[in-house]
Length: 136
Image (tube, rainbow, N blue to C red; front, top):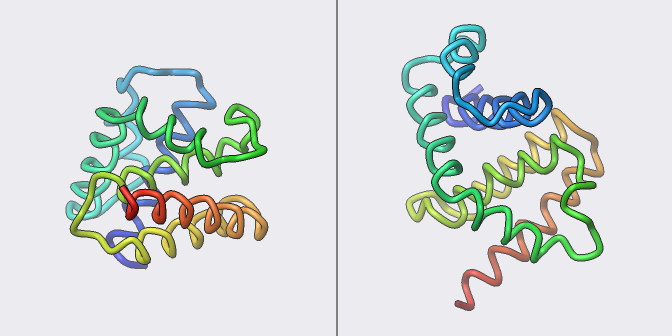
C-alpha cells in the first residue's frame, strides 16, 4: 500500500474513532498513531489531512451537506461521512493533489471500510463537489 493511501486510511479511521467515542479532543491522537503504526512520511501526511480538517471542519461539513441531496448528514454512515470529510479536505484545500486522485482514493477507501455501494455514493458526491468548485 502506498504511503498516501495508508495516511488517508489512518485519517479516516481516526475521525471515525473520534466520532464513535464522542470525543472531540485530540488527547487520543498520540495513542492512535502508536497503535496504528504509520511510517514517518505517512504520519506526516495524515497529520496534514487531520490538521486541515480540524481547521476547516465547519466549511467541509457544510459542503458535504450541500451536495448530499436527499441524504440527511447525520444519517450517513460514520465511515462514509469521514471518508467524505478527508476527501473534501483534499479537494478544497490541497491544490497540489489532482481531484481525480482524491476521488479515486476515497472510492477505494469507502469500498474497503464500508460497502460496495458506498464507493458509488462517494464517487457521485465528490464529483458533484469537484464540478461545483471548478465553476466557482
